[in-house]
Every structure is written in structure tokens, then in C-alpha cells.
Image (cartoon, rainbow, N blue to C red; front, side, top):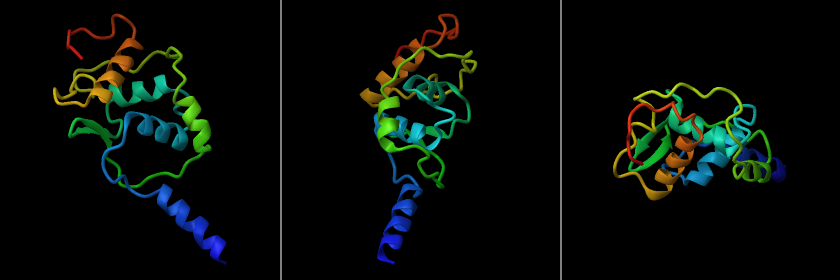
Length: 137
């Protein structure tokens, strides 16, 4: 009976609300592990975080933070998510249209260095004509 309780507690922890900020790498791994049908690579996860409106993440204290209190359990092993989180292929389908209100365009000047680097990576994956203004990252 104790083994069953431990596994239930472990599952409950994986679905627990975010306790605040997470690193870029951990955020990408979480996205891939929880939604593997949406995100099969780092490129897709970064595109979603920085370009897609209503992605569920917002800027807080220089980091993108998950706004949702309910968390989905991992759907694939965390070890597989870590491997996919390092995979950087080009975007396979047309990207979500760039908008002046997306997280890439609204990144605060106080964004942490790792998040700025991730933003540059997301921007580089967009087609050359996707961004019409010249915001420095």
C-alpha cells in the first residue's frame, strides 16, 4: 500500500502549480514532456513561448513564467524530453504570424540573459520578413 501512495504523491507533484520562475531549459523540457504532440523540438517550444499570442506564459521579473495554476502530468519520459529540448531543426510549418504584442516584442529591458538568448534563438528561426520593426534583443 505504501508503494501506491508514493506513486500517487509523485504524480500529484508533477501536476502541482508552478512555484515561480524556471530556467529556459527547464521550461522547454516541461513543454515537451507535457505536450509532446505540440512540441517535438526546442525550436517549436521557443516559437510558441515568444511568438504565439495567448501561449500561457508572461513576463515576470525578467523571465517567462507559466500563468496556469493547473499542471498536466508528463506524457513522455523526462529523459526523452531533455533530448528533444536540445534538438534545433528549422520550423517545419509556417510560423505563427509575428505580432507586436507577442512575448518577443514585449520582452522587458530587464529580461535575464538566458531569456534574451532564447529570444534571439526564437527570432532567428523566423523567416527574414516576419519582423517588421527593429527591436534589439
